[in-house]
Length: 151
View: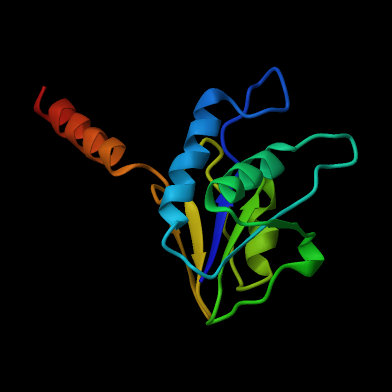
């Protein structure tokens, strides 16, 4: 499978991840920990130095998993493989073009979503908006929605 995620939350005043973004990388690494043949890819920052969060996110995940990361561009995306799981960390504005390397789509990443994941199989894809969210957070959110309906 190919898993495409967004870089994690950044500080609006700098180019770096927030504390929540850093902590999310630990949670993401745990999510992918069971994948023995996992390769991690991301993109270099733009020439003006913007968007280093993709490298920060991929590097932190790779460090926790003891995996190297590879820098790619949209022209050298890894091919789908039945033998290897692939994690690609990208900027949300690249998602449509990135997904188009694998399947036709009209997908637009929800701007405020940091928990989503595009899951690409050989001939199809899905978007799970809560893929990276911890089970505890999912349960609390469902409970909160239930309580709001009752009030």
